[in-house]
Amino acid sequence: MLTPTDIIYYFVYLVCLVFSFIKTGNLKGIAIIRSVLILGLANELFVEWLQYLGKEENFSHFIYIPAEYFLLCFFYLQHTQNRIIRHLIIYSLPVYLLAVFFLSLKVYSFETYPSIIYNIGCILSTIWLTLIMFNIDIVDNKPLVQIPVFWLFSGLLIFYAGVYFFNTAYAFLIADSPSLAWELRIYINLGLNIILYTSWTYAFICSAKMKNYIYH
Image 1: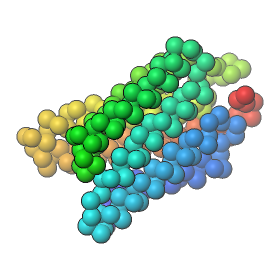
Image 2 (image 1 turned 90 degrees about the vertical axis):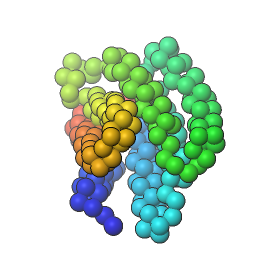
Image 3 (image 1 turned 60 degrees about the horizontal axis):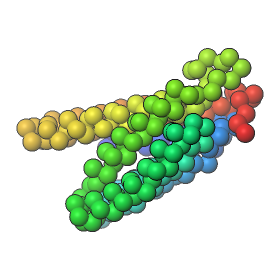
Image 4 (image 1 turned 135 degrees about the horizontal axis):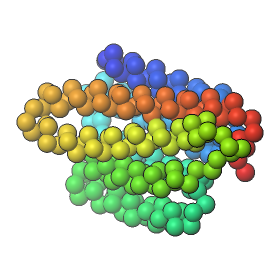
């Protein structure tokens, strides 16, 4: 059954998804962002359905989490020409995939939520986003806050950094105060998701307004 926080989450998510189709201008890599949004929604709904049936709900995360990382890496690559950054991102893909296979089989057995796998992706994405944001192209002396990709990357950076640091603290909180840890998890995750999808929605609006912000 959907809770009030679920309703808020899905509302913000669906608004972002709709805007990704109607307010994107010439945003480079928008097909990748749409794919992440669609796959994410499909994963969330599948998990909700399994929970409703009272069945094991974590299996789909072993597919979606690495798929999300791979898709976002392809998006990062489209927005940087720095050879060192590009090589680091490309080399991270097979290493991450090996880590996913090992942890899925040996640690989680495709049953419990793969938090380590997700945290590794969070760390790597935080690194790539930080490096890329220092190399964002400024178009026609536009303020940075008017550039769509700035908002896409900012939302991702805040989200992944926030999730990683909270998950680290959560491991300690759950042992001392499980109820508090779970309540914090609900509201912090909701807040981070709202920041992410609101930032993306604003990026789509910025892109539609910037007629001269053309990517080649």
